[in-house]
Length: 371
Image (tube, rainbow, N blue to C red):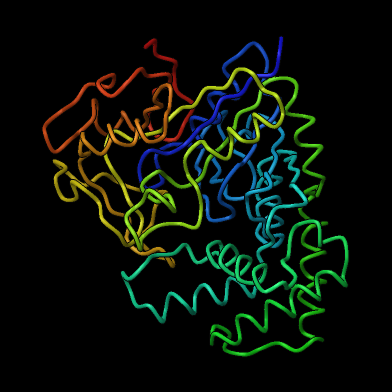
């Protein structure tokens, strides 16, 4: 059989059950998926999966990991070695052997990006924008500015060279420092220590940095699940500014990779809870219209993001998201909370917004439901 792929995206503001959908698609056939590929976003993801008596919230590693499916981080993603090492240790603590490769072209997130991210958000004030505090947006923004200025931009491939890391860190320090985003500007000795710690973290994580061409070669055979991050309501072009992400959250990046690899059969699935959610600042249609506030044990209100908010769906927003994303079917989760959808216009059936591929109670592996 020729190569084929399924793409998973969120149709809301994140937290729609993408991890559960990826786990389901990775395990539903007679054999496991050959790979799960992250195609946008970075370590800001929080994809909780419950399966086989195990539970983990994925941020760097792919959500097929509980099932033993190897993962890839694609060239339009970001990668942070320190958090990757911490997550790898947590997965090994569950008795797993996580396997992850990262494209050498993926942008590299450093501790300087994280510090600047938190400083920028503090200067904006609460509610002005919103952030996960992981340096994702700062990584994208700084890379564009440095590239425009003809200065080095750090990528995962630079982890193989101390000289390349130092050159990139020096340029990044000067860029961020000139904008008042670093409380203390580290000297060359301190930056060499940052580089050493990043290289050590990569080794501890077990993540392989490989050419993008190898990813495209792998995609040319077998079955791939593309794992999206965040949601359509946060898309850099489609979301309500300024409360958006520095990322294209539609299936577009995955479709580009699939086309470059010559994959002929590609489908896209859009994820939704049975109620709407948003973590942190920004508009949330239908907020306050639920019959009760659902318990959210995996989404605390602490941290850089702020409060986790819930509401009833606006049917027009769902219909817009389905059209704008071009998904072929829906993956619906949290039917243990509300069944069917709760909307501001009343209850809606699970199939009212399109064919349904997958339904789940919470973040666990669910069932296939015929369209």
